[in-house]
Image (cartoon, rainbow, N blue to C red; front, top):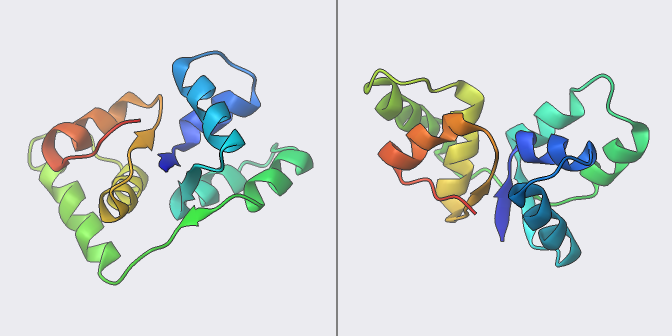
Length: 124
């Protein structure tokens, strides 16, 4: 199972090329992916998202939030911020979902590298 980030999903629905898009296609075919809930919110908040893509996204699994998630996400973000590095809140929330469920993240967003280096986030 892999967690999928917004950047990869957008690339996928826009028919862009890349290793992440190919892996997402494989994961969708094998039902081996899930969205962190913040990714679901990011995707569904796109005002130009076609209805067919909205329906597909709503039918895909999400990663559950467990007790203490918000405090752990804050600590994860603080760890990166203490290094003087960029740590956007949505990225910290996505990272925490992955860490809580020991899932690698499928993304093309380079900002996650700081979470990998300082917090143990793994990539697919």
